[in-house]
Length: 126
Image (cartoon, rainbow, N blue to C red; front, side, top):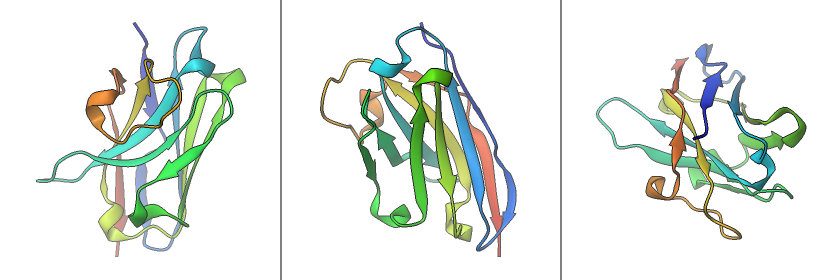
């Protein structure tokens, strides 16, 4: 069992920045792909970004490319989501997730991730 805990959400003005953090338990953190998802009110949960195990290859959904950066620090069992130039449409609950099964390919489907955090609210005011 992997425990996942997000932090760093809050209220930010449009155009501002916010950094989310996610810590996952376990000695094998470096072997997990990690992902960020979000869910806005009345909408389905959607993929935001993912970072690969070990070497840290990244992948983003189109709407956040150039604005968000996902990174990981394996020594701290932590993955980050740096959110710059945020927009009101970025408002959502952001979830961190662990894919402990995939070896190579980063996955965008939430069903591929087997451990989830409780979520952290990000609200962007216009």
